[in-house]
Image (cartoon, rainbow, N blue to C red; front, side, top):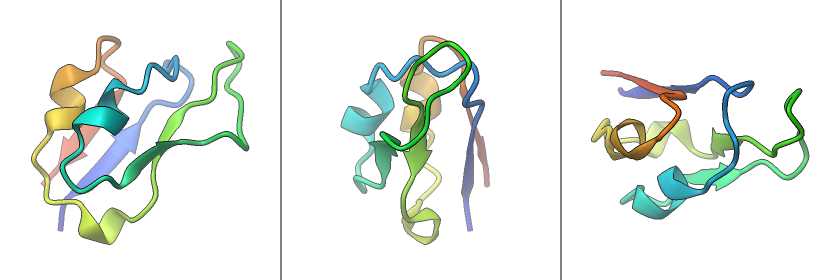
Length: 68
């Protein structure tokens, strides 16, 4: 099973990963703020991740790591 890890402190909530995820399992966590004042992205249903790494590829701030 693939696992996606976000470095929440570096995430600026740009939503690019949300838009590119084919399984639609990434969302902006509106309940949390990082130290820079942004709502970071998070995976809602990790068990549905297929490990495509589209999210990591599109992230401009290299926030996402995908372990397969």
